[in-house]
Image (cartoon, rainbow, N blue to C red; front, top):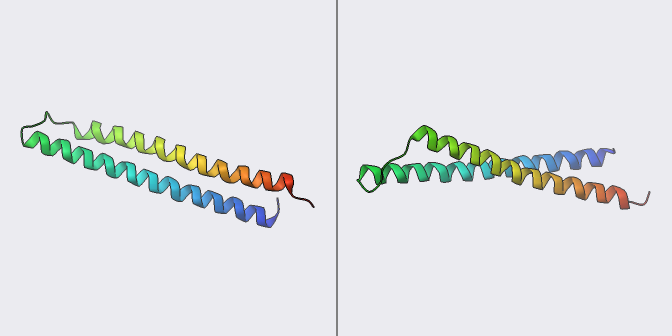
Length: 91
């Protein structure tokens, strides 16, 4: 593996990490908003309420799964691009 290819691999890993962090943050934000909405509805008598620990745990598992799936897809796309480049590179 050449120096350029190592740098590209590091770059794709960094991009995948940024995607993971962004998707995780968005999913946890949606989970927190959903919990606050359910709590407000319960307080006003329009809902039955939810357990905070259980609700946020489901959101955490969901956020980890979605962010890992998206980041893996981005990283694998980068590796596929690098593999294609290496395969078709005329040296």
